[in-house]
Length: 346
Image (tube, rainbow, N blue to C red; front, side, top):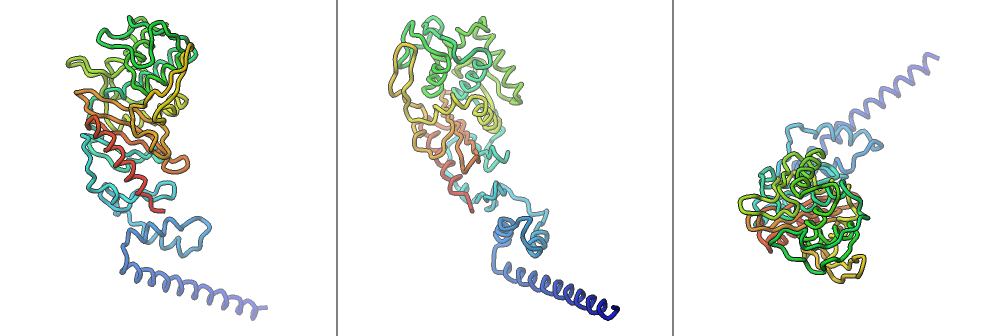
C-alpha cells in the first residue's frame, strides 16, 4: 500500500516538474519570438485568441504581457479592444479634415475612437432640429394633424418644397420631412401648432429642460430650427456631447431618424403623395450600414454633419463634424467613415 502511494507521489512530482519545465520553456520561446515582432501587436493577437476555456499557457502569457503602464493614446496604432475587434489608429493619422471639431464615437462601447476639439462649444445649426423633434414627440402624438399655415412660420421664411397653404399632414410624416430636408418652415409650423405650447419661446424653454434632463447639459438652444438671428445662435454644443445625444435620439425615435438614411424619399401628406424629397445629406444613400444622419449649415456654424452607422452587428458608431464648410462636411465625414471602416483588425 505504501509502495503504491510512493509510486503515485513520484508520478505526481514528475508531472509537476514537467508542467513547470514546459511552461518556462514555452514562455522563453514566446519572449524570443517577441524580440522579432512588435510587442503590442503580439499582445493584441494573444488577447484576441484567449478565452476562459483555453489552456493555462495563454492565461499565464496574458498576465505576463498585461503591463499596466502600456496606455493607449490617440497616436497609438492599436486601439481599444471593442467587441473582439481592434481599432487600428494608424488609419486616423494625417487625415485632411477641414472641420474645427470632430469625433468618432463608439456608442456600443462608450469609447472615443478619435477626437479633435471635441469639448469645444460650437454652433449646431440645423443639428438642433433633432432636439426639436424629440421634444415635439414628447409633447404631442405623431398622429396629430398639422395644417400648413404660412402665418405660423418666421416672417423671413418661405414654404419649403412640397408644402402648400392649408395642406394637412400627420405630424410624424411632417417630422420626417423636416429632418430629411432640414425644413425650417415645417419645424416652425409644428412647434406653433401643437397645443401644449403657447409660444415658440415656451417651446424652446421646454426643449432645453427636456434635453438637459436626458443628461446633455451643454446643449443649449434659442430656437427650434437652429437658425442664427444676429448675435443669437440657434443652438450650441460640443461634438462629444452631440455624438452621445444623437445616439440617444435614435433610441427614442428610430422610426423618424431611419428616414434620414435615404438619398430621396417619397412622403405623403393627408391629401397627396410628394415624390423624391432630397436628403440634405447628399451621401446618405452611399454609406453602408447608415442608421441616421442630420446636416446643418449657417454662416456662423459653417458646415455640420452627424451620422450613425453599424460598424458590425449591433456595433454603432457616431461621427460628428462641426465647423467645416458647406461641401467640406461631407468630405470630412466620408474620410472619417472610411478610416473607421478600414481600422478594423480582426
